[in-house]
Image 1 (tube, one colour):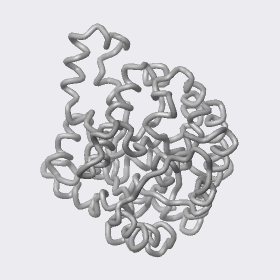
Image 2 (spheres, rainbow, N blue to C red):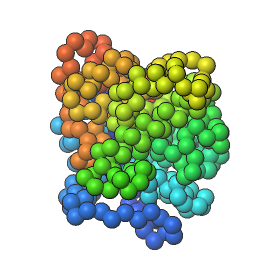
Image 3 (tube, one colour):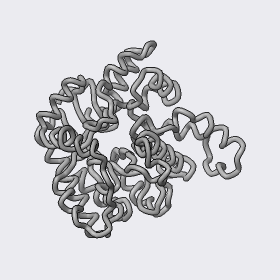
Image 4 (cartoon, helix red, strand yellow):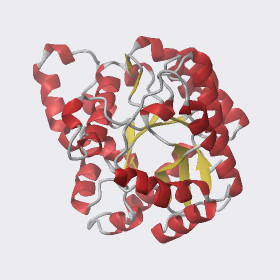
Length: 328
């Protein structure tokens, strides 16, 4: 396989079988979609996720050589609300669908699956199966699993398996977990998604997950939420608050063990992320095919003044090649 120059790490596919499985499932979360979202689902999202030629044309327009495809990321589709049997069926259908989509153009599409994260021992087996039998490179997970934050010790078997396998773990928020105050003005997405990611990453740092499992490959959506953008507050809190004395190293060291996508829309935001994270920790992201994504991830990098050719190449594809082990 020729080395791809630009890799979109943040793109999705919706399994029709998952939709069927959860349609009448007891306990499935129910969301009231707006007329606008229903219109987008029929006119934009459905063809974009079901027709690989539509996907490839979009990639060409974005100047993207390869797309990392992960399951549709919402609370219902993650299946963390389901019992063990139902959750396993959801994960199997989602993972097989991603594998089928990628098999149509393996030169341009590579997949991440899902896991039943609320059952950590099962999730450990699922990530191994996805990688060994479906040729996926890791899994997408949510910002929490049921009643468990990501630093819950019960999740350690999953983290251990993912680290041993070299699995990529793409953290994507499931939607609004922060209550009714985000019900208006689309705050569920505008504020809720990045804030959910911020909380999850902070748990990983101060809960000691990144200390116990230093070789995890964690990639966070939407520029890592607000954490890199205001990390000075996290560092100040660590310096003055006894509740944050839970880790043996400075917080910034753990931040630099995380990768984030460049889905921040403008060069000024990306410039700040490069200054905080370093170009070695950033990948491209579009959130294809959703309207809250960005259409020109490569152009955003090209518009950033002062970025060296090496740094630009890292962000566009070099970091993703290493994370996904495409050079092997």
